[in-house]
Length: 168
Image 1 (cartoon, helix red, strand yellow):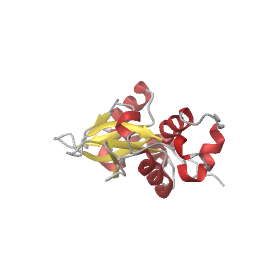
Image 2 (cartoon, helix red, strand yellow; image 1 turned 135 degrees about the vertical axis):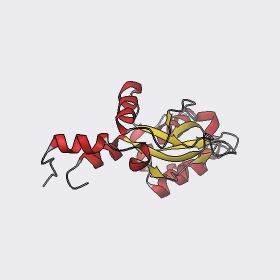
Image 3 (spheres, one colour; image 1 turned 60 degrees about the horizontal axis):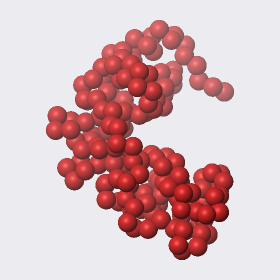
């Protein structure tokens, strides 16, 4: 049985009264810019996530790296050109059973592979602006940063949708 909104207008009014800090997941899992590809893949597998913010030494987001970024990098180093599904079902690069010369090396960091665009909001940003930013920027996540630009949370489209559910 699926949850439905008993009164959608009430849910929208409730959502409109919220701020980014009300929806964000605090202290999100992140990666340092110097983290290696294998470290990132292990983290994604262990935490069952598909992307993470990349932060600098001060904790400020400088980009985003996704599982797809890592897998595309691996595929480029695999002369066998494995299918994408092979990568999604292998939890780590070690389980891909590639020859050693095709494994990512410690020289490649997440900073080398990340998307450098950072879309962020302040904790006090109204959720209506968060939604407008997500739609306007065509993104599924926004980082929440404090006055110093330090990462304090993340809001995903799923966080917004969960809040709209009648039982959320």
